[in-house]
Image (cartoon, rainbow, N blue to C red; front, side):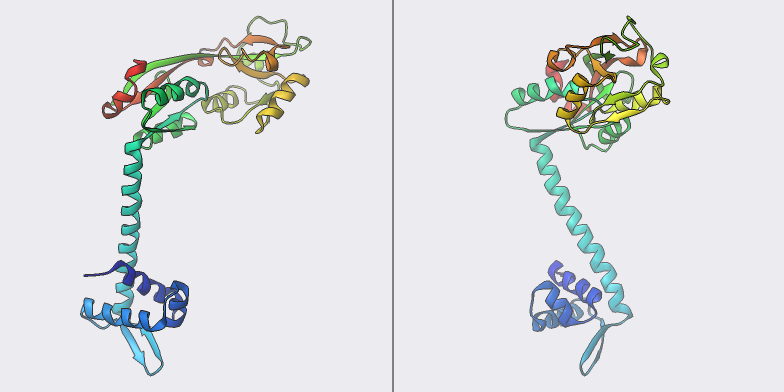
Length: 276
C-alpha cells in the first residue's frame, strides 16, 4: 500500500532535485529518505530512478509516479479539510446576509434557540449570498423579497426602508420625500459592510460620489460635523446621538423599501421555524 508520508517525500525529492535537499526541507535524515525511495520502487514494482555512483534522479516512470503522488496528496488534503468542515457544519449555523440590520435580531435569536451551536455570519451582496446558498456555504440566507430561488424555502423576516439624512441648512432639507433620480449627483457619506445597499445606491446614483468611511467612529463624527448627506433607515434612525441634529427624508423608490426573507433548504428548516 502507498503511504502518504512516503509520497510526500517523493514529491519533495522531485521539487528539490537531490535527496539531501529534500531531507533538509522535510527535517528528516538522508538515510531515511533514501530508504523511502527504495521502498517506493518495491511498492510500485518498477524502477523509478536513474542511479549512478553519487547521484539519483527520477526516470520517466518516476515522474509519472510523482504526478500520481501529488494527486493523492491533494485528494488526501481535501478529504481532511472536507471532513473537518462537515464536522464544523454539524455544530455551526452559518448566516449569509445581504444587509446588516437583519443580523441584529437574527443572531441573538439563533443563539437563544440553539445554545449549543456556534453562530457565524457574513454580510455580502445579493450575488454572493446566492452563491453561498447554492454552494451550501450557509445554513440561512437573508435576501430581499423575490430573490429566493424557487427550489428553496423562504419566509418574510424583516422590513427596512431607506432614507437620507441631511443637516437642517442643506438644500434638500425642505423636501418631504425624494427619489434616487433626484438624489443622483449629490455626494454622500457612506459606511462599509452594507451588503446590497451599497450596490443599490451606486447603481441608482451613478453621478454621485461616495466618501466611504471604514471606521464607524469616524463616520459618526462626520455625520455630526459635516454638511454631507448620508443614508439612514427606519431601523438605524433611532441613534439620536448620531442623527439627532439632522432631518430624515424618505426615498420613494420601490427598491428603497425592502422586505428581507430568510431563505433555506428543507433540511435546514428547523433553524427558521421560530421566525415563520
